[in-house]
Image 1 (spheres, one colour):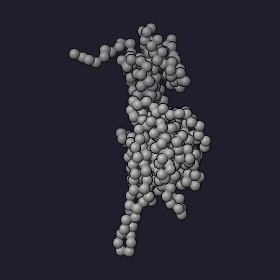
Image 2 (spheres, one colour):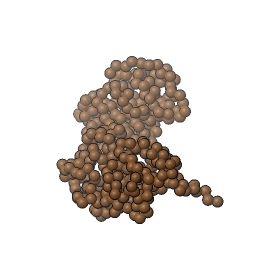
Image 3 (cartoon, helix red, strand yellow):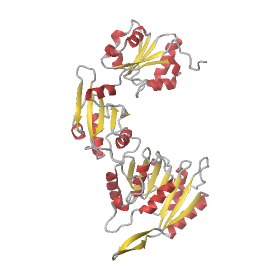
Image 4 (cartoon, one colour):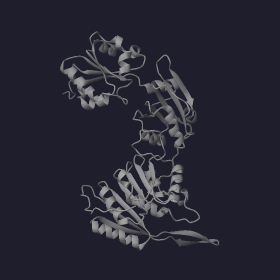
Length: 447
């Protein structure tokens, strides 16, 4: 018995087109286009193929009207009219076909793909693309990239992919142009790590391919609006230690040290946070940034939002961020809980310092934690330990306390002795899966 869905004889044809127009179409695609009663496409594509349409064919310009396309297709099919939707290149590669499949029955579509402009660009440069990562930055203008930009930025996905991939193929947009992409590479300290190629106006008379550009060169250039970008590494991708870094890996305040969560405590704190690859993490009282930056490496598909009130420590954390090779970390200078309302709800929260607002901060964090989320707090004073446990008790949260005290070997003459580090209390709390939020009284806190 055949379980496949029956084919609809009046399917809408989704046809991939390139910028050489009719010349890019095979015989089958061209036959469907020439007999179509309704043709839907962008203004530029419709103009490119207007001479191939049959007399009287109805055309719809989808520019800025993507939501109307499923309705146009339904109306044509209900009227038993042959319908064609024109797409650029491969309609299934960041194209319109997945959108139509989502809003129409998949059996209502017949997809006739073409070469992707990315494939053409790779062919021009001679770059193998089977293991490359495709990223679209055809997004709204979010402005120039700044180190520490949040996930809402239009170039965020690209910044993340640059850290993880050897080769990238980029579909650009009018705002997120090749020169802006090059400036992102420079801002992230990757200007010497990648070569760029930019293919402009492919298959047009004024086609131009810049096959070997450095990001520094590309950042100063201007390019045609129709372009794609290829990026490939000139040196191996770093494979840094993700977990358990030595304290010396981080810049710390000098001459006095101590505003860093020590390696042993940091390792246990990160373990208790129960991080996943896509976790959203808050680091409150970031100090040197050690916990948040290590969490950023552990959550490559997530993001860390950190805040530090001390100006000197904030500057140190910024320098550690610049040296750490992560793009999923946002650092703010301020005093919690100011500004936390702008952050997305967290999966994990680390509190290394509270600025005197501990009880109110605990209440706010537990209200915002996602189901299954974890709050981990580090204390070295009995007073803060008592404040935290009393606040958690009053809220009715589930919590526990773990005391850690490590001893490290130190040289003495030609031998070694053990020197004790200060004891640290880890207070852990959370909101369970399916558990209702803790009942927390509203409080007014002052920064």
